[in-house]
Image (cartoon, rainbow, N blue to C red; front, side, top):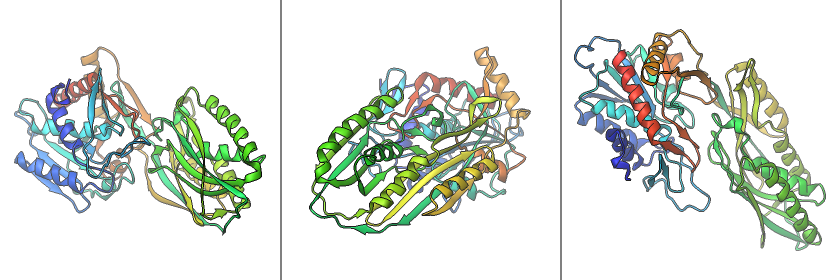
Amino acid sequence: MKIKDLQPKDIWKHFSTINAIPRASTKEEEISAYMVSFGKSLKLETNIDKIGNVIIKKPGTSGKENNPTVVLQGHLDMVHQKTANSNFNFEKQGIEMFVDGDWVKAKETTLGADNGIGVAAIMAILTSTDIEHPPIEALFTIDEEVGMTGAMALTNKQLTGKILLNLDSEEDNTITIGCAGGVDVEIDGNFTTETLSDAYQFFKIDVNGLNGGHSGVEIHLNLGNAIKIFAFYVSEINKEIDVHLSTLNSGQLTNVIPRDAKGIIAINKKDVTKFEILSASIIKKIQTQYAKTDNDLNITLKSIKQSSVVASIPFTNQLLNAINTIPNGVYAVTEGMEDLVQTSNNIAKISLKEGSYKIACHTRSSVDIERDELVKKITHIFSFSDVKEIGPYPGWEPKPNSKILQIAKQCYKKLYTKDANVKSIHAGLECGVLSGTYPKMEMISIGPNVFGAHSPDERLQISSTQKFWKFLVEILKEI
């Protein structure tokens, strides 16, 4: 079956259209321009602000013209990730989607269902002629995935709605009413280099085959982190053989658990045989450790000719020790709610070569004091580096007694004869930022089942999208 033949057709048509447009975070000019053109083609009031957010307003249908205005909100950007061997060019190619049973997937890349399917649903409401709804302000923000700079740039004068439906959640049986805040932690520094004699052999180390994923909603799954695995592997070698680190590269975005890492190390040629024997044993140990979460994990080593400079053994040891020590994954859970992560850290990116290095983490928490405590711990561990916080964003405080939540709960039970789950999540949603700008606006977040977000395994369930659409339409009808 082709994407265009899926039901409801309007959603899949719009999803296909926006997925043909490159829309990486901070590079949304083309998709923002398209949304302006889209709104104007419907003869609806359409505005774009200085940063690239687009707002399209549609009057309420007959009998609902004076009902409370509802903000329908989604973000235009998507995470651009691809498999290690893919030649896909995100800047020039549209996402190559295909149907696999009850799922829509992408060939070798992220799918963009996060948050393209929410955007497509809003577009379908804007183009509809037979769906009951109150006045609508459709808000399409930019740069949610990297810094939430679109949401942060909104002023309290741009929207008039009293209710906001964020369509960026990823479980169709859940109404989200709160989320964690977070901050990027950037670490950088310099180190003294040296050039080795011909007595040393260089090896390229490649960690690959990990699943990766969303550093918020999937952080509790204990998925392998390529940076941590690389550091552990080299450290284990280093217990018996002196290792010089030459280069190390891994990760692209701070909200993605890194799937692969590539580095170059040097050892004395007299230790090569011992190194190869040690490697086989250590790799097997690591693969066993991650067999349940990342069963395709592999670590390969290749002897190469190399003339690059290397770090000294003391600095190599210092850096590896810091990476091994830094908290990664779940740091704390919410008291009395062991299934809700409260605080976490994801060591997400590293680039090291020729005397300098840069590392980036994303630290999340629903408790600001605990987040700050974790950042201080990271700063202490990397005391030999410059550490700074970039773009902190607030969490979203749950309001379990809001009127819109009661409406949504009643709609869900009416449609599906059972109660929806109501919960906070550990991922960041723009509702945290928007609730600060519009403190009196009631908010909930809903969406279809999206699994593997922020990785090439991202997939969107077709039947769940149909369920989500029916739920959204019913909520609008009842407001």
